[in-house]
Length: 490
Image (cartoon, rainbow, N blue to C red; front, side, top):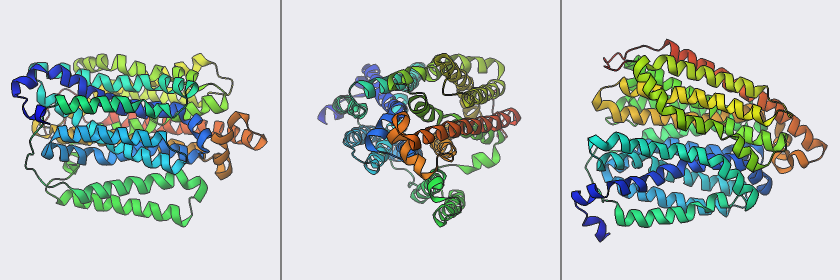
């Protein structure tokens, strides 16, 4: 620690590119882990005997925890030291990865994924902030661009890497590869990162954070377990009531506290901000769950290997990574509304094409469908982000960024739960238990479960396409200028 305290501002400036590399590793690890697990889920499910619902929660638990903790983690880091919480996030994520690799039952794996999501929240909340603090304005945009690129690389590398590892050395190594990376980053960060001082600040909105978490958890659980419990069961209805109560209480609390975790006034008084954030939520709700569901379809309905599945799913994140910078530049010229709306339409079209996929669909068809979705995502993401950030005053940028990040992550968790719930609706309780544990190699009952999943997959893709159409309508009809008087062209 002494090495950290002796670093001067000149030392920090001289080592800024090394610091960028260090924080970019953290920006890479979270997205890598979220994408690498989806492709390997059929293999994991067969090994641990997971039901389809449990498999959905292996993914949803990570995303849900990240969504709930992202803003509180950022607030804590701002006031108690970003470096401390960045290294804490790396440590928690690494330990959780070890626990994931040692899992013997589904509950253990889901619990470890919750812990992983907590670590990812602290990494995500601090990585870009550290980069912003150590780079001068003249280099900051370039540095943040590299940091964001690390996120896209993680999303791109995840599917083929996850498939290769699952087929070659076993799914547990998907989590074990995080151990040497995490240990190296911890040591490197301990020696390299400048320690930030504690800064007095407003009290954390603990109640608001708890209510937001309660709303999402109580909503996602019945969405995914309704097939086993029934929509009219006391558990399902009770949790939906709890979710609605938490949402109402959250709105009341956020309107009254001095430092809310989400500034709801931005939604109520800024039409462009509200519409662009709603579009972002719908965007991720529509498409994020398709990777998990398609990976299961390809491996258990079509009988593909995990390795081939990973390569087939690569087209979507690859196009997102390559084309997003160009769509951002284009939106600066023609405005963001046309591109964002067109992107959502492309996503809807790609998902509708996926709904037509049969057991005999050729490989090129799968890759082409994902390419269409990736093209749509690239057209939507940067322009919509520009609309959000350009709709607020400069002193509201941090609040706007936090709000948008929460919408994205909450949308991801809701997508896995909603699309997974629609797919599961055709399985029934028995089919959900047999699908992953037996798959294409099972008996007659398991074969019927596979056929039922194929139908459920079709309905899930159509449901996602419908959400994307709604998102396109929201993007198209949003205001062209914020009510607060943004100077940005939207």
